[in-house]
Amino acid sequence: MTEQPTKTLSLAEVRDLAKSVLVSAGADSRSSDVLADIVTRSERDGPRSHGLRMLPVYVQSFTSGYANGHAKPKTEKVAPGVLRCDADNGYYQVAAAAAREDLIAMARENGIAAFTCANCHHLGALRFDTEPLAEAGLVAFAVINSLSMVVPQGGVRPVFGTNPMSFACPRDGDAPVVWDQASSMVALMDIRMAAAEGHDLPRPAGLDPQGEPSTDPNAILETRSLLPFGEHKGAAIAFMVEVLGAALAGGTLSVDNEERESFGALNIKGGATLIAIDPTRFGNAAFNEYVARICAEISGNGSARVPGDGRLAKRAAAEAHGIDVSTEVLAALG
Image (cartoon, rainbow, N blue to C red):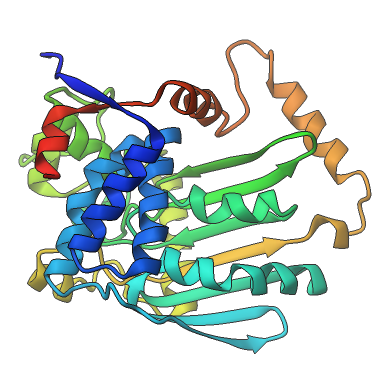
């Protein structure tokens, strides 16, 4: 693989670039601020496939008219521990950010609270939706469904989206534990990035045109048929996300993507659910000690590491030295 030339940008420069591109595409101040922050944090922590390389997808969603860059989300309290939101065809992260303080307050009052959202778009890593809650001392779990491209175990056509999920919890005296993952073997944007960079995937992640498992990203992109992680176990997780995301929120099912196809978009208007739990209300005063013990049993255990902690080293390096960005990517962003 030929090494591509790069240019080093500070995180502030990454954010300014993202903000400028989003505003030019038609996003208002609030939406562009939230999305530019997500792009920057993706470049900082990973996955970088959701960073600057994702900007053209955001731009296409706005310029095509598929997504609303001036969305005004409407959130209502439908039960003592439930917030329900219509995102006004904007990005989920914008709606979730606006409702965050109310969700935190409800979780602290009731011990547990949930935020569901429909009529929304989502293209970033889910960890950025759960991490702020863990920073506030809460345990968080988030799911969102996406356009169908994952084949159920033994199936012949996609039914589920990559259907990601994220978990976060506070860690006394340290950064929260935060992880996210797709229900597919590999996230779609990682496959697209491998194709753009000209290398195979480390393991078979989808089907080629002959219906065989493949490591060739271009073959997988041709069929848009990804494999679930863990075979039937990953397919079961994808089913759970479809129910907790689309069905609870009233979002578009992964297989119902006709509108997406007419706009040539990469995502559907799926459904998202974010659950916040206040551990101080569950009766175990030693919660922090339990989390610390779990983490201690993992750290130093061979090459094992606490889930999601790989992002912390990337974060420190990016904050100290900036980000090396492909000049090809920069040129494409204008």
